[in-house]
Image (cartoon, rainbow, N blue to C red; front, side, top):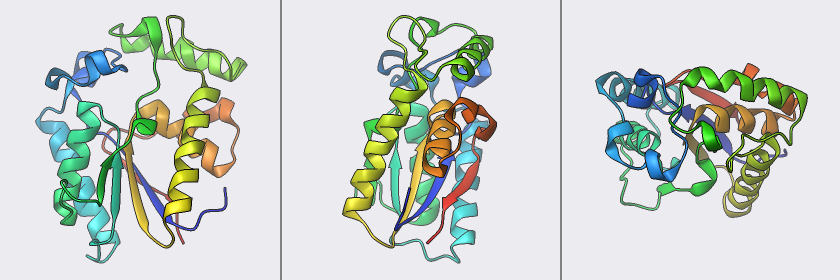
Length: 200
């Protein structure tokens, strides 16, 4: 992609779902607070905000923060934004559905060890999707492309932070960088990890 903005990606802090070792990928289970951030995840989010502020030399007033609506990502974005001096009630903070976690279908609330069979299927076919309404790599990639088309049409020269989830961000990274989508998991972020995607 030819991009005219600077983009950072941030994976949500360690969540209660991570601590329980279960998959939470839907609105039904991802919105209630019981799968939000424990203290460890909150600390990661605060640290990510401090890290970004330092990398920007303290000049963060015009940063645009976009996040998934699921609780763990929203809480992460709020805490990081506070470190940047960004009001979460203002236009510089937006919740966008395109950054939702990849839907894992019938694997919802199953042990997170089940991820591996999905990733093995991804490597074999980009159109493979978890049964029960799950999303394929291609489907996630297409919604990411749509988001970037919208952002690039609306902004130029801004710094934009995208706060999202593991699979969504690894697929985003491969999509934007033009890397093989079948290998998206090689670009996975750790919880609370901040990474520069593109710099203008």
